Amino acid sequence: MDIVFCCVCNQDVNVNRVTGRDIYPHRKDLYHLSLIQCEKCKSHAGCHQNNGKPLGSIPTPELRKLRVQLHARFDYLWKSKQLTRFQAYQQMSEILGKEFHIGDVRSKSEYDKVVAAINKIREKLAKEKMR
Image 1 (cartoon, rainbow, N blue to C red):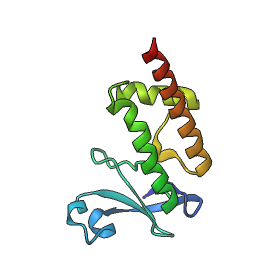
Image 2: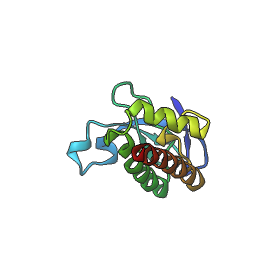
Image 3: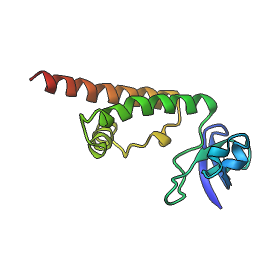
Image 4: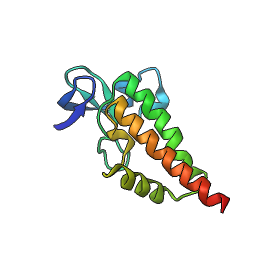
């Protein structure tokens, strides 16, 4: 059994392995997904499809929305071809002083720090482009 931090329960919790069929019974297109579910509150998070490792902590509903917004902001850095994906993660890790993964963002204040780091990279890229 895995232990993962649940932002809803605000503690490390035991999790059960479930599938998309369990969480999204109305979405046949998601049945193949591998997920974890908090034993206490039943909140869930996704897992890497290649190795089954949790994608991060289990978010609250609000945090789940914030993480989606972070992905849109962050992924633009590498999808726009301004940086490679590796470079984008590397620069974020350097600015934040720790290995960066969106799934590790556990609060609104952490979200704000990540947004500030993304903006810092965007500003740097804009300055380089003007040269």
